[in-house]
Amino acid sequence: MTSKIPHFRHNSLAAIAMAALMLFSASFTAHAQQAGHRDALPDLNRWNVQIVTGTYMGVTGAGLTPYTGSLASKSRYFNPTFRFGVEYMPSLNIGIKAAYLFSTIENKCGASPFRNNYRMFDLGVNIYLFKLFDVTFLTERINPYITLRSGYTWNDLSDMRERSDYSSRNGHYGLGAGTLYRINDRIDATISYHHTFYNPGVNVDGQRTSGSYETQRLAGFMIGISVNLGSSDRQSARWFRRVRQGPQNLIFI
Image (cartoon, rainbow, N blue to C red):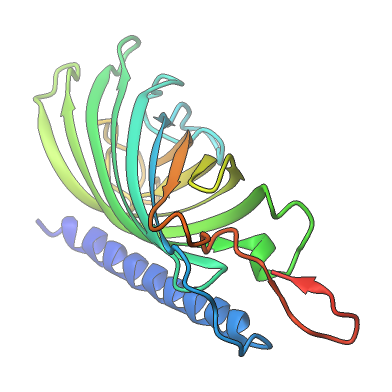
């Protein structure tokens, strides 16, 4: 029991730090959006839903591996993953989101086989970079973003050699990046990369880690669609651009 207390504290501190960072990002970007734009916005569609698929994996346990994650037992490169998310945009350059993900992460061969029916729920914020920094080129079709998130993970582990099946629940925190491509007024294509961190002692693959500071991480590569909700008579907040009057009458986002 005592070994779990530090992990709980690490999870709590990580969640608090991530939540504070999300709130700071939301406050900063909302202020940046309002500065110099005192005229009222039109009525916009601010809600959207995302349906995506891809892979979540951790294929190596050596060194810093941001693109493939890190597990004690290597997983497959492709583990079928599905995610459903909802986003609300309080301003033109940030989105507050909630997402649920399901993946089957496994390794069927080698000395440490495992199968994890992995589920994740998280809350986070998307920061749309072109909007944030008033980049005007390409924004009619391309809208890149970075994402910060924190949440809860369920691990249902089975098929391990000489170990019984078991389940665990753990906190996680992560970051990522992606971009949207506007297909039409209603539908956007989306592609993204996510990196998910856990505290020491959390075993996504069911294998005991060696060393108190060793952590397991997962990398996710996702592709799918995002559907803008609301009336077809209103523009999406993601793609709305307005004119700000200045010395040269330049167009800003």
